[in-house]
Image (cartoon, rainbow, N blue to C red; front, side):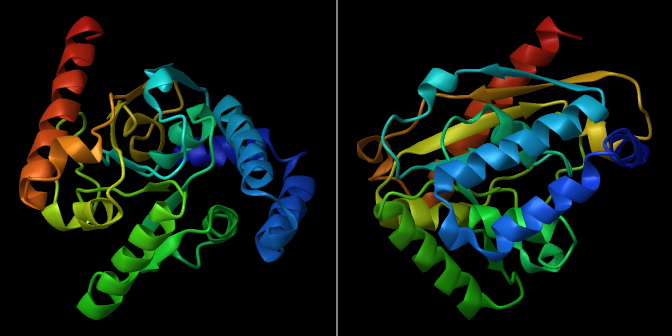
Length: 240
């Protein structure tokens, strides 16, 4: 968490203007296109990464579908996870997040810019409503990210179990599934160091609906988890 304090201090002179602009974007999202809001979040992201001594290496950006209406499924390592995807993804996307973080300053405004879906994991009916809404929106051309582990793994580069229910929206939308392998993303905000750190984002080849339409959601989850872990293991082996 000490790195968060460092990035705030290093961006202190930019903070008032950027905070006001972010608040305005969040309060009036209808005045800006998704592309404009995404570009502004990328700018905020770059400022944060520079102030936090974090370098991002992105691989497989060409695997991101050219047409909108797909879903990202990354592994979930830490508090930093969404930031490298925002910075390296060329197209806007939304995110499914737990309601507990809905009112945290800055996150609240960033989520508003993204049009995030806040899910109550203790309310099955509300959760299904969110899943159905995500499926409808993705079918309509929106891109959405969901962490299939449900929570941070807290095991570094070891992926936690992917939950089958997380893939229901994709199967309903019949959309491409894009696995995303995050490497060392637990280091920026979940360790007590301010030393320069490099994280990796690997966009894997998407799974078209035709490839997974006959599978159960638990089978899809296991397949995506295995592909992500395989890429992480190879990356860690090359860069110990």
